[in-house]
Image (tube, rainbow, N blue to C red; front, side):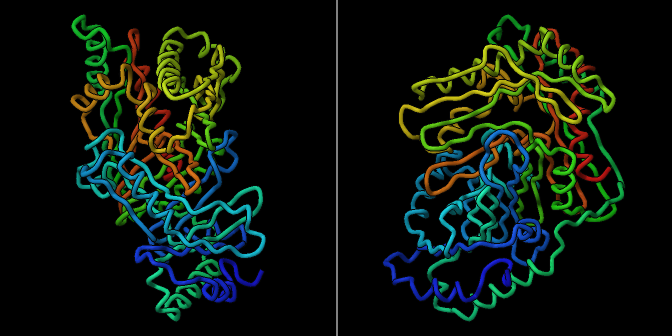
Length: 467
């Protein structure tokens, strides 16, 4: 294939077919086939703008196509001026209504244009100097996108109709994009040297968990059943961290996880999460209850560890709280909900989790963002009951968690979409990394055991950093 991203001849054919439109804010979306290696190469270079990655390849459950984006056609950032998540629904619908699509031959199976982004754990928790660039929620319609599906690799270029007046400039951009794909490496693995590391001490963690246990046992607040406190690690490096290299390392080590990256103003939220929040296809939805964990060493007997987890009364109670909350939320909007009678065990390189895949059929179609608002945050990342748990965490956690444990995903013009929970993740800014990990606390939890669990979870991101 001569042109690895998009053929200029196709560009000219597409523009010749576009008729004037009455919408000043309309956008053009051009889609053609491309080479599969364009996926990694598109995000290995910064020349085309800020990057987004949604990479579920090798993940067993359905969370949609793999997508890599560069540049911004539209960015919607909510800094608290509109309802979190649901406030974007009408604005995105208006964008999709005014989208003029043109597809090359053999592109019928290409995914439609989609917004990619996410949201904070709770409203107004992403306001500090680092997280503030991300807001309560932020979604991007990438200017350039490569999508990988079972039908092949497809590139999509989105730009405002107004830019059609300068065809020469568009051709220059197309030439640059093709050059980027041809010259960029498929993977850059760089390493950084640690200058300083600041962690929440075991003593401070123990005090935090003990406060949580006191709240759970308090008769005046006895409706609290579970809390999920989070600790943060800050690492300063001698040199700048490459976020794409972190995604590549996480993908090599944690193949069963969805890798993601969302970049803004030299900051990148990067993760490799095992937890699907929701997949929406028409009226069919799929979600997971993933709660109750044990650390796993490299030489662990997986079968014995799985039996220990399944027989753990504490972990089963923690898991059942999540299943109960998800079932109740889905039953309010669904014609049917299917939940396994007993959980399975999800095995990762460093942890084992209790896992229950849940299926439902909606009574009528709902937007993915409305369903995310209905489900998030689940008891797996906040506690139960949800509102009481979130309130306690916002008052007691020593550091704001920003987008950690927030919903990360995409939605398209058809009303389909997929979201994961932003676990096993970190915020990167130049030579700084902020890593996060939490643990579910219920009556009977041991602070030291929970500390070891968070250490195992943090290892996902230290591995991604090359440490």
